[in-house]
Length: 332
Image (cartoon, rainbow, N blue to C red):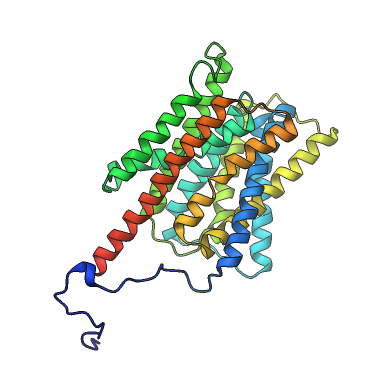
């Protein structure tokens, strides 16, 4: 039933600039302080994951390492959601999101990143992976027909310039095939993540992201198990090695806890804050890699890091603002 026009204090034919400004939209029950805490914890935990993965792939078969982490994380999330009463069977409507994230963002991405990290330092690997917004931008223009604003073009070019800095002959050994292969694999993994994000933007959800996570991890577990059986069937895991068991347990717990806390951060913070805040993850990875693993932080890596993060920040902010503008236009 229509209650008639609402009294806003602005004539209906007033220019758009005269319309009252709305505050940022926040989901029901969001608490900013909690969001900031969750964001800080997520950044630290995910930042710690990359040095741990670097250690793990050095002492055991990389795909088996990925498989065991994902199987364990999936089981932990199933138990956690059951205990808090939020475990739900996904509907047919959520199947595309489960498959796209399970295959691209978790399955293929995790397998490729673990393989690539055999030859790439933790900090550099995290930085290459978190170039995702650079690949999302052209895909969004091609697939979703989003407008490519000048800000997004500028951010994309700056970010790609940062990648060029990372791959200059002084910053990486072009004669080492394994090093070049590892870097290329990590960038390709980042592109697969971007493909999954595009699908997620088109999807209409019934369950929330945390409720979908164990099912997505289950799909990923199947993929990583099959891949491990094909590629590493003859490479056993040294279960008697205390370091192996420790890394597996820590890696599994980090993945499950990081996913749980990360979804909470996204719920309680504005989109721009969350997306830009997560860019601290490669910075933390780089510092932890230097302190714990003795990885060198050269001038090339620092400059590349700064330039890439500037580009990604510009792209992320422009993306969120463009989306908000389109929603506002639709409401007017």
